[in-house]
Image 1 (cartoon, rainbow, N blue to C red):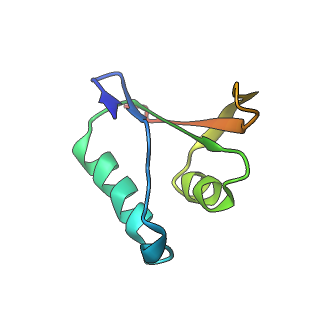
Image 2: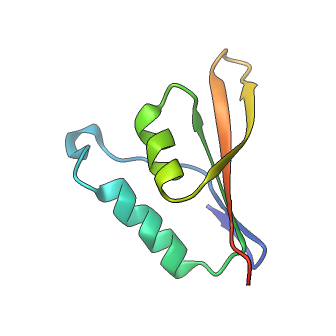
Image 3: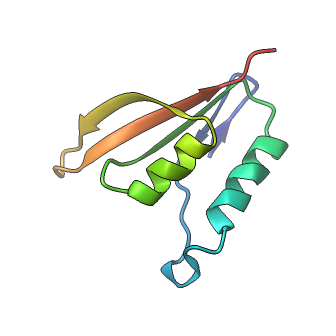
Length: 84
């Protein structure tokens, strides 16, 4: 994770498959928002990762970009902005 007063970039949010669907990712996202006082939060995932996309949208993230990696994976970038 990269963080400063301007933004927090969540580099990787991963839950062990044995613990899917137990609310762990939701709790991790809540922890990030409670812990870091940034105006912008950024996260990326694979476009085909429906559960992650749903989670980020549930937390108010908006899609800002899509692109293909060198390995042929379609990625999606989300941002959530806070205004004071």
